Length: 558
Image (tube, rainbow, N blue to C red):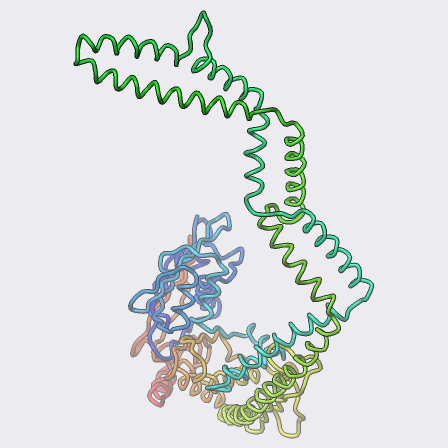
């Protein structure tokens, strides 16, 4: 439920704090005092649009905070999906600001969210009904969803079974369309696939080949430099000349002289051994290097072949995905699709058999949905008629018409429309044909009264839906409001004393002016304050002892 609402710099409201209670919360006040601005502020906080006059004149920023106490599994999952950590106590704090530039910032439990995310979360918090929200009832396409919410336990599983079958059938039809479509297009597609298959097969791509070729290209491309450097190294190590003996020759001479010196000083023997090892190692390395140099030779033909192969690999990569891995994966898909199209006659027969089986499953699932809807429709229609009769529409008849539509959809084969006869002797007709705003308000309230136990949303808002209602009917509407208040939190803006008298919590919306500025304030009413306001609603500005007594009687009778 909505526990607290903080509004700052919104239209005529400079700053207001409202703490709502459980049950029926009534908002009253003179016309133009700003009652609807409270609801508009809440709608803004929940992701609604703000008009050009929303920001209070002369202010830089408007803000609305709404604190909810909600702890349902659906809401927790939705918060987590949007990266918001649910509070342990189930509280949800929504804050939205609007700057003078028109930019708004939305936060949920301190986390910044987009308006789209905010609207998605708000769907599980509040249902708002007002004179402008009647359009959802007038739209027959919405009726099937309303009826489905009445269908109770097990209906969701039946719907999921139908949807699985419906999607499976659509996929089979898609495959059949591809196989049984335009023959020339199919042949063209097969030609393209065959060319791609042959080109990729001729390319003989393999993973790691490109890296190997690049290494070979690097080596062959620098062969002349490599041969020159290797030759010089061999000359220095092994060959030498008269002017410059080789490293091996010099090491040999040094070793011979050191061996002769060791004959005079045994302590030099360790140096002799070390130098002998070094001489042997250098000599071995020089011989191996010479053998390697003998194998080295320039190979321009091989280098050209490598270059051509790399160019082919680059071409296939560009055409088929950007990498060898992607090209190989593309090849697998080409082979699969070509095989699919080449064996189309056999596959068509198999798909047709699968389609026939799936169609039987879909029909059974659709029949189950229809049967549940028709049984529920009768019960709901009876309950709505009873609710309408309680609100002084004694001769009203309500009917939920279910017909089969030509094209089955993801929600079944049924076309659902709510029909009503508001008066005796009138034929059933669509809700859009109802002329009276008062009748429409009562139909909407009757629907909500019947739906309440199937609805997880904890707060309903009714914005002046009592238009066109008065007298005994108003009393009945008030009783329905109070009934709903026993099951959910209700916020209701009303001009009728019969409804205001039913309040569990009563708030007065007033407009004040000091000659320089005008502001709207919200005052909670209790006891005699509430009696006085109900009396004002009964008798206008002239409150008398008679109207006060009548107001007390109304409140006592609730």
